[in-house]
Length: 502
Image 1 (cartoon, rainbow, N blue to C red):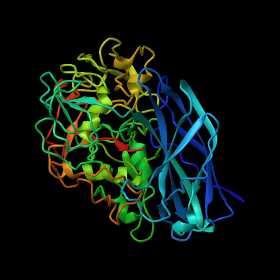
Image 2 (image 1 turned 45 degrees about the horizontal axis):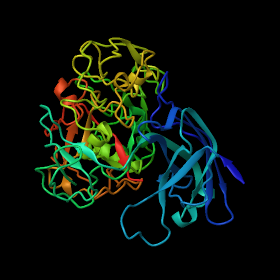
Image 3 (image 1 turned 60 degrees about the vertical axis):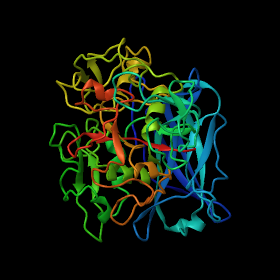
Image 4 (image 1 turned 30 degrees about the horizontal axis):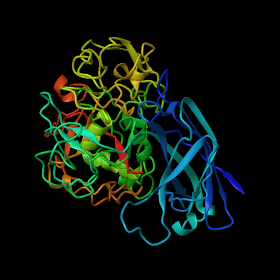
């Protein structure tokens, strides 16, 4: 017996020439003879790849939320980890709910799955009839109580395991150049590293963190883009009334106060009632009271996020925060450090003012000022006549695209690691940040809408995280790979992206 239920398109919607336009469609659920159920859907995105010079690939992180007909509440669907179905050209890799060892007693659940190409290649992909097996019986949810199923997909890039250079050799003011050549983060640097400086598990001159602090040596997945406005809206619309108001805004006002000229438009379209019903959130950048229109900015990254709000999103999506050494690994890959380099692998960045076409839409693009020779990024010189942030993936969608620098892309294909919105990363230099275990979110939040992961660094203006990559109002120095901004202020346009250990 099969039930047709609502489908929800991806958390990060990007379209146009070189963006990826990830979509989920045709969601259904059917019972198995045991106490499990099959969740079936179609998944597609553009400009996928696997192999090539970097030897990595892109993937979709797919996870499922279920709404109870009895309570109206949403819960994360924990997967069995076996019995999944993929088309011949796709691979489905379930990912454990927890990284803690030893593993907890059965059932050993999976929080979601990565879907990616089987063979090397590039181009658009369309994967029909993917199936994930949901362990609903052990989760205590009967199929008859399922009112709605939502399948979410977030674009990710795979970061290969191996040594990399941390720090810089220019005037960035970052870590002392070190070759990270082990996953034991507390291994003190010594001797001579193959990529410069000493070699070890942490940057030279820093104190030893937790042994398995995610230092970037092991393979991991990183979000291709920063968390989008629609992604945050998706989370809010699966929370209770009490959880929804974690941003602290009264009903009927913007989720994030737009007092600094930043482009954002998350609003409460329909206020909820405490203990009765949640509010309905939407993107409404054009301000006409109708959410989700083409020019309502769904594909703009979240801006002005306190760390606790980013952490809530990452926990809800069963991801985790990224560390600052992982940030450098994503940018630079296995290549040697260059003096004053940017994430696209050169020390050049354009300073021409941008003009925008198709503003606030999924096709928002650079109309003027796009450089094919220098790196493209949203920073103070390029956004002086326009508002920021710009939509995710905007530089890769230009018809004049001719390589990594023009796309503003990192070695592994992550976008906008320089400029647009500054990114929270877990600090290596702070004792609280250095105790981070890398545990993943469990898809659930506490009763007040905050992350319930005790191993994550929290706190108002905490020094446990640092700002990396700069933002649309930054000076050029903050955009550099090795630059560390240790002071995060409440008025800064902060955002971020998540990671996951496979």
